[in-house]
Length: 106
Image (cartoon, rainbow, N blue to C red; front, side, top):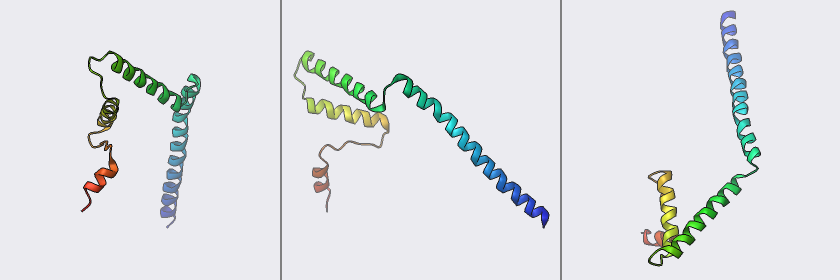
């Protein structure tokens, strides 16, 4: 009986020790992430805005320098579709969702 209690006590303390070590490990692994974002002084929103500014610049160049005048809406929808395609093969962009819903009701 005592052996069973000791064994279950060891299992419980092993589980608790594991959870404590896992928590410490996760905290230690997340600290460098906080420091790296603090070092640059840029938040996630700033990085997104910089990327959107780049996209806007490229779109402006395409509109100015392309032989034909491309439709901005088509270019933006194509970029969104490409972004989702890179994310995974199952994500899709449906531009007119309400129209899609009405067509598929039945």
